[in-house]
Image (tube, rainbow, N blue to C red; front, side):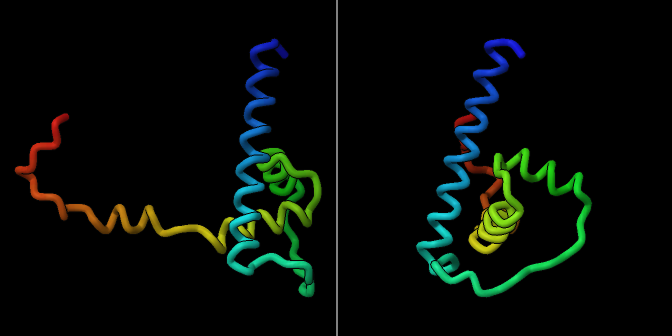
Length: 98
């Protein structure tokens, strides 16, 4: 791996860790995460999927991956749907300055 490649990988990892921390903090702030872990989740998925998701999220444990993935889903906003829903709401004759 080149020095530039190593720096990019380190930067990507730092960004992932920051993003993960912010997601978990937001989930905690709205009461989705707390001290009590009172539910067990079980399912069968491919090991390749789990490893790819862990690599992408820069996490190592299954529990950490599940908590992060579920938090992301639970706090996800509806920006995309709202944006698409606005299609055609701006008059065609408006000057956008582009």
